[in-house]
Image 1 (cartoon, rainbow, N blue to C red):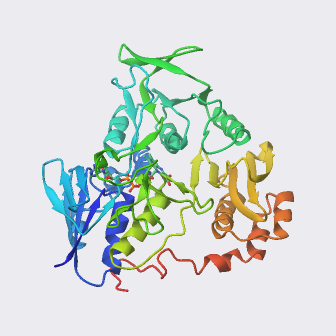
Image 2 (cartoon, protein in one colour; image 1 turned 90 degrees about the vertical axis):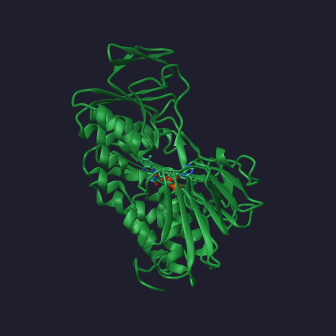
Image 3 (cartoon, rainbow, N blue to C red; image 1 turned 60 degrees about the vertical axis):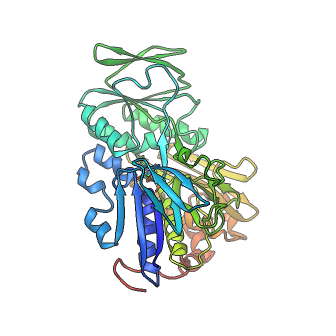
Length: 438
Ligand SMILES: Cc1cc2nc3c(=O)[nH]c(=O)nc-3n(C[C@H](O)[C@H](O)[C@H](O)COP(=O)(O)OP(=O)(O)OC[C@H]3O[C@@H](n4cnc5c(N)ncnc54)[C@H](O)[C@@H]3O)c2cc1C
């Protein structure tokens, strides 16, 4: 009988797994995909919000493409329980699906700050396509949008809100914006830049209630003046979609703990993407990296292993990159490790700031911000990623970099980092074009 692979979740991790199984398998297998939503990319929702792409462009697999991949799809259905002893998955309509192996790739959901009124009308999350549609329908030119939470996700939709010519205020309870992405010095530069672009920012803002007032929202704070908003978007964090695994015997910590083959403690159950707690490339510890590159890599590695290959994973690199009003902001690896040796240089006149973090002569993390049209910012983000990813000892080039934080290129080239990166492959062999047989 053909092996039956069951994939739960049709996001980035799930779909990459499906495609990779079909690329790498040697025999015929059945693939069953169960997904609460149609497959689409959350990461492109900000472009849909800003009207630079149509809604049809967010989808990552049409029904025709799924049929071509010979996928039996249960779209719009939720997994509700998993019996790992009997290898059976139950869906919300009572359907029971048996499997030989199973991938859990159910992603995350947004969490709203626990304040009265946070669930009321006119208050939105921005995580799913359905939620994006709700925001698209409400934002008007000249209207006042208040973003609650100044983290990465809020920053991904900032340009779109400005493109719709809405007035924007960003609130953050922490003393600085982007508290989990950049340090205080970097945040100071970004705040100055945003104020210059007429984005109002309130840090240390403890929201206490959101009330309805003649069709608008009144936001009250522990201290400071109220705000009146037309649209409130809560970007106050996410949680993994794992509650349906209660009683399954799958070990969950911050996410599902996986080994270097992305298997959970149950050998024929894998996890990938936002729900997986896997190896961090830099620290070697386990971590949840709720970012697109990790979901893609996890999905590919699991797909190859489900197809019968034996692929280990080195670990994922934490990396957040966002551009606001033409200012690039990026941090990667152990950018906030207080025990690492750090060298930083700010050039507020150029809206630029860089910080490099070291263990011995190995670059383990970096933070960089600068103008997006400054070619050095864009190139240097890529080169810093390469330096951290390869984990090369940089020898005397460390001294050069610490004295000259804008001289990344020389160190990158001289240390032979390109030569180390070029042969690297995720699955131990070159990728193939869709449809090409290995
Ligand atoms: C607005 C926005 C912008 C972003 N921008 C970036 C960015 O610039 N860079 C970056 O790296 N990351 C970005 N991200 C994060 C990135 O989108 C996620 O890390 C990525 O989508 C994770 O992929 P995943 O496959 O693990 O989960 P998801 O893509 O969330 O997919 C999970 C799937 O599982 C389904 N599901 C959930 N529960 C069940 C269930 N019980 N049964 C069946 N199906 C279920 C869901 O419906 C969904 O289809 C952004 C996210 C958002 C919302």
